[in-house]
Length: 506
Ligand SMILES: [Zn+2]
Image (cartoon, rainbow, N blue to C red; front, side, top):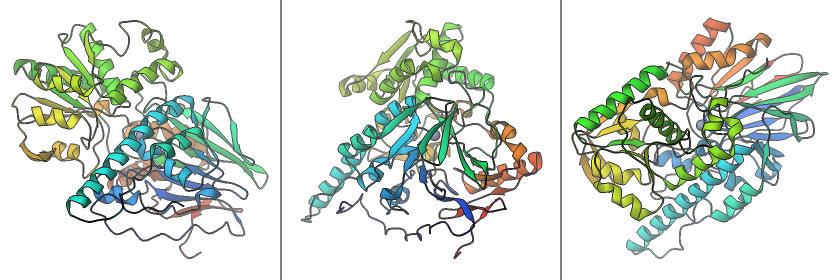
């Protein structure tokens, strides 16, 4: 393991190391340990073990403020070299962001995911490495300014670490079984959510019959117009299911588009901009898609639209390469000039100079990353627009606690952006219908076909109140028990019995 000299300042104490999952014990046929996204939304990481294999499902970063970021430096709860393979559901950083560290610290297997996820993960991890390098350089500079003579602070991982991790990616076709390691099979199913996203079915033999574990990954909306899915999965005995929006339904797409129209009209009346912080992956393309459709239908006037995120531009190109992930109707449109991801006056701004020229424009829509307003070019657009009455700030994705995006959504009227305090005069809208995640009804719909085998449902990837709300609905609707694992908890498959929580100290 490489030595690390430091981390982002200020460095909080490392969280106490959890006890390593012990080997399977007599009578235990399989086990799953919850190492992240358990009782929280980020850091997806689940260790699934059979008698002769050990795979990791996702290896994501913790996100949302400094305390969470510091957790990315904690030692892994397992020896990376002992993992046979990784199954990756999708390319969001809270699912794939620690893969470079995993490889740098000894993992030598393959990372299986959809072909689209492999391509998108490359873009996401390179961006992540750049952010790590910037953070480390900033921390080193600060240390020097304070007159401390210490070696430079190393980033969490480097571009080379990323390249090695990307070299381990193996694109798999949706719907086809493959064998990541002898003794277990896996299959990817469309999950909608973002380009390439999959739910993963795991199958293995135990005591003469096939056992099934399903990992939902993140589940997209059923009324999302662009992406294919979610697929209907077969019955399973254990279902790991995300519950990000387990407590509510989003507004319908029809209502959401009507609201979006009204927001654009309000911006027109004030001759102001509509600012849309977008995740470079997913929301940028969906918002672009809807803008184009509204313009072509004559429901809003054509206006300058800026896609101001080099990464979003790169990801948009990948939509063209992976048409299989799109709803059939859009595959052909993508190939035409008036494609599914075009508006009449679309400007793509790759360079910093082009981006800075947007500071003076009015009456435009500006799509820029990052989606939670934590970093990136969006901060400059917020600085130039938030204090203007008439500016419409459109939040189109999930905002984690502790982020600037969440503060704005919560109605904070004075925020710090790029070191400056700004009074918020803009109107802040939350367009829940553009969420990449299914709402409560969608989650229940996804689970329904899997319930005939009376599975244990383990709810992950959610704040505790949302998880509890979904557990209640699942009990009512399907009469099924739900587990609410916390970080470090395990479930075991017992000989002769089903899945049960593993008692601490056992
Ligand atoms: Zn996701």
